[in-house]
Image 1 (cartoon, one colour):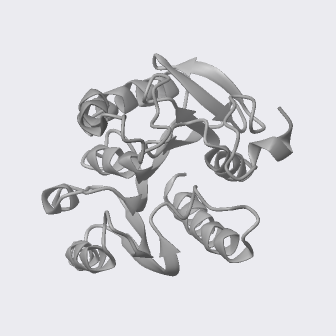
Image 2 (image 1 turned 90 degrees about the vertical axis):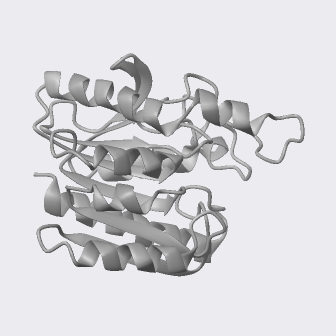
Length: 241
């Protein structure tokens, strides 16, 4: 598949999209890109649409260009959601099979595999469903050293209270899943934790999913997504070292 097909709208999903390769890591098929012997790794955890999403792989390649080994595992084992609005699709059953607690355990296996390769510091970024997994990982300094959550899923106050690593949360002005007002509230909770650096930002004029599900032909959408990508990269550059 050509690179142009990777960024069609809607995109044609293919494991051949991106500059990296698909390998097995921690028991999961994983898109791997960047310097293979880097001691610094970034784990990207997709939203429900899965690890083959072309814009997600494009972001992985961008982060890898900064010197990180970047891994994007298939947490859904070949079973991503294709269309949420399909009346024949049983959403409840899917979310039970692919719950975020299981995601956390699968992520731990990936992290262990990275450490066995000599990786000494790991950052994790998650999108919606993936952000919920990242927040769970952020409750322990043994797993990751920094976290970024982009357009979060329904994370709880208790999960925010449990965060123990530097965390950035990037949200959309218009988000039916995680409203901006809720993000502001969580930002205030994080800001009083003097022992923990945090960064909360609400992007104007965008909706849930804007960082990975944007139309590449929409100049404004691309600009907003790239701003979030830069914030993500800057956070990891600061704390994953």
